[in-house]
Length: 192
Image (tube, rainbow, N blue to C red; front, side, top):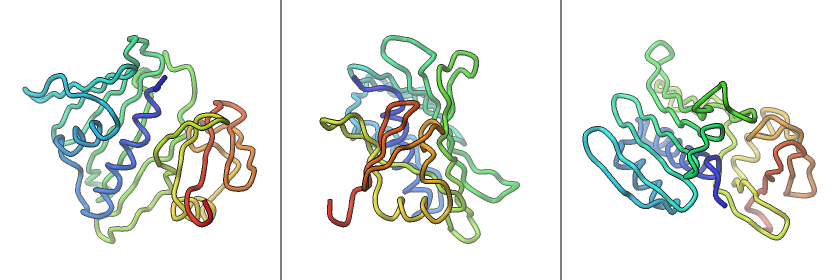
């Protein structure tokens, strides 16, 4: 079963790639195409709103000056719903992308995902978000990151902190399992 986090994090990675390489926010159309790549089907688009759905997840896109994407379980349970928000912070002259609980009061867990901060003057990524795609294998459900993301994360901080929930990671080679949320992290590249 696909959960909102398994859509929100890969979507955020695709949005971050546009922000870093092109120094702009992705358009609503680009976000919609990214969601289709992640297996969601477009049900409606128009009047400042797009609605996409898979069997397990519903996504609403609100493309305006900022981009807001609500990712909800198809069951309607708001406690697991997330918002992916991208905007231009004029004070910092940076593009910011955050993944937040859609409902702070109801959310059952902690979101430990570091925001994406792209400095528009230098074009540099000023934060260390650990974003990637998810895959399931015999050991569980893993966030798969590339070698470059892993090296940036390793240089900057604590590899024992889960990038999804802020819990404790237990590593075995290039794979880790979170002792709190149950998701894993897998580094793809090199000899994999």
